[in-house]
Image 1 (cartoon, rainbow, N blue to C red):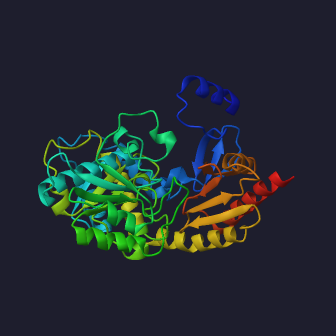
Image 2 (image 1 turned 180 degrees about the horizontal axis):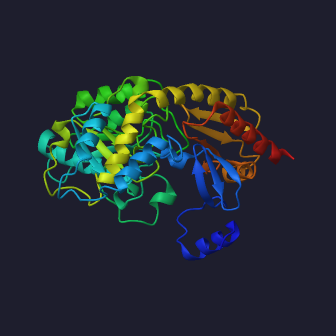
Image 3 (image 1 turned 45 degrees about the horizontal axis):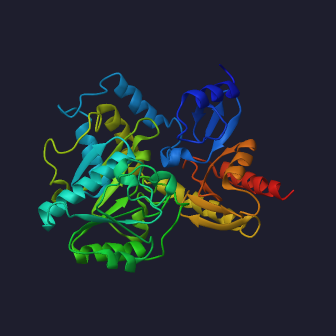
Amino acid sequence: MTTSAELIDVIERRSAHNYHPLPVVIREADGAWVTDVEGRRFLDCLSGYSSLNFGHGNPKIIQAAQQQLQNLTLTSRAFYHDQFAAFCGGLGDLTGKDMILPMNTGAEAVETAIKVARKWGYEVKGVEPEQATIIVMEDNFHGRTTTIVSFSTDPDAHDGFGPYTPGFKIVKYGSIEAIREAIDANTVAVLLEPIQGEAGVLVPPDGYLTQVRELCTAEGILMIADEIQSGLGRTGRTFACEHEGVVPDMYVLGKALGGGVVPVSAVAADADVLGVIKPGQHGSTFGGNPLACAVGNAVIEILNTGEYQERAARLGEVLHGRLREMVGDGVVTVRGRGLWAGVDIDPSLATGREVSEALMERGVLAKDTHGSTIRLAPPIVISEEDLLWAVDRLAEAIASFRR
């Protein structure tokens, strides 16, 4: 089996159809570019949903991984290892938090935040046992575990997987009044994405995050920011919350924290929050393993320079400026921040999937969501020339449906 068609045939027959990939089989990658098994090159404008913020094969990250592979890959948390102190200290300094609780995937980190918030509610706030509630947002995407899909409003993620986990109140994203009305004596936290990625890169109204922070402080509840996609340089700041000068009680991190090499996630919070977790109450065999920590340490060093945040901000202005010129010419709306954009295609022309396929034919890989929206999130290492080339290909792809 050497051709894309042969490999896709086997994959479609032998793997569960839980994804609907574009028909491209990638063999290797470097920076912002990938190459398929036939040798065709494509510009990656998805970045593994922000997992590859620092590019494919980033030399600093690869070197850290290779070195650690030769030394130690796993101890489990039954023992200490020499990479753990630097990871917890470094990520704590980056987030400005006292403590780190490492896990593997983003969904695991969200589950961790939920457990910590509930336990904090019982032990610190004094909520009656089994009564804690967490306020969440419509159109959220926090993962696909049974607990998380219980409060999803996406039928694909939610329907058919009940019975569902109680303890969540779903409110309108972007409405501080909706949150205020949902708070009661049993509320322990508000969980939100500073920018909703899967929903189409939805940016809340100006001042919303500030209002959420102020309300949570006034009501004595935790503000939990899921920065798994929006964090670690993607929006032009280390965290998307920084655009409003907001510091949540708990950061939920993942994706780019693993540098596109291994799954790495974490929850970051102060000791009065994470300190409620005691030995045996939460963990993971691979959470905080030496290889993950070595890679995470390289990522933290990269972010500490500020270079990638500045680059994402600068190139983001280029990206959004060019995309705005397309509004009214096959594009209905453009949203986003930094090197992250949601582009709503005129549904009378084509679906998002059709435009993604047309883009692929022109050498650009992107992904649709919610019918007519295209998400653009290239690696931050992309050159300005390549970025503009990608947007020109998008314009061509859209124009092709007018014929």
